[in-house]
Length: 286
Image (cartoon, rainbow, N blue to C red; front, top):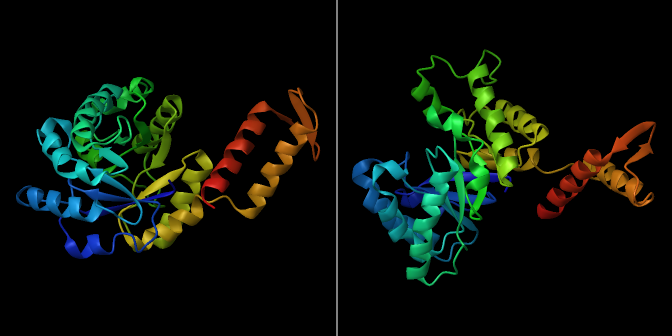
């Protein structure tokens, strides 16, 4: 999952074009993008758009504390979405709570138990920052972990989120790092947050490349024009693939070795693991 594109669940026009940008996953949004009086309309339209969709579908439901999550699931689960996106998740227990709800709705819709995975957005409240080490107990449904900047800024009362060069300030850099570590600890995909200035392609490209270099495997998008930039940033280059293949071959030539030499460098097992992970990503992106 390199690119995950948000599409408002109440916009027939945008839903009809949702897959045109070739995002790896399209997220039909029932939460922030939809006004309260449009929730029921969004549920109906999202269910229709998700049914027999030409690509992988996620649905962002409303947060657990809104009382709307179960109604969201009842409306969309018959369409068999691949993922449910949980906003304002604070701990792994929130994902486990959602998982229990999903089990009921899967049974009612005739879906195999556990088939629907969860992507949690995990830094949208102040309390959530302290829960990022708990997602290893979230259960087998957790597929990805992302973080939120805008909601967190409001929760903390922060006056600015980015420095003059466009990079996030220290507060949000910390949240980003904790999300990365929490995802890896839980065996979930770490996914970088949205870049809201969709007209700033250079800024998006820089942020996406930095996220990929730091260990994130994908990024959320709010506009179709961002998808191609994100896909490029998170797709290993030919040079990176060739280097990874050389590292794997060097270890294969010395079975059982803990350290090998390559081009004057001493490489150990973490280098091999990183190379194998990069090659797996390359295969998954075609």
